[in-house]
Image 1 (cartoon, one colour):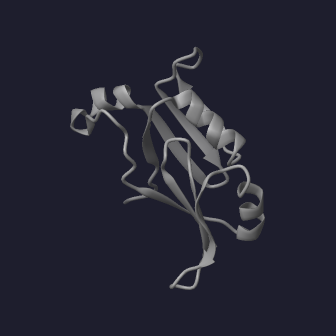
Image 2: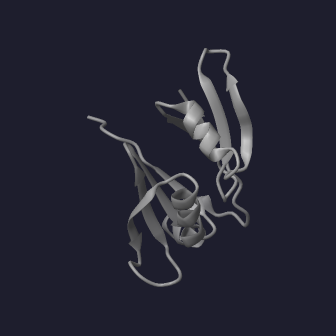
Length: 126
């Protein structure tokens, strides 16, 4: 029955968020709406087996009025597994704002976390 889940993140500016995910994390834009122009309402990004959707705040609120808020306050974290955490940590430690440095968790995983440009926490684990 269930096959996949893809996060749709409310963002202030889709174009700026695409730039962060492309330039810092190496994602690629798969699709944006509208397809051209300065103001984007929606985008899909992908890297390896991961897809992320981004939707501009007012556009998403029009679709789901119960999400109405003046200020976007992150209420979730993304948990991303990788095969080489040391290499990725070394690549990102000077490019992204760290939420948590590389450490061993109580459940035995190596992890670190970064903030995206909207303040969302991306936990990277191996």
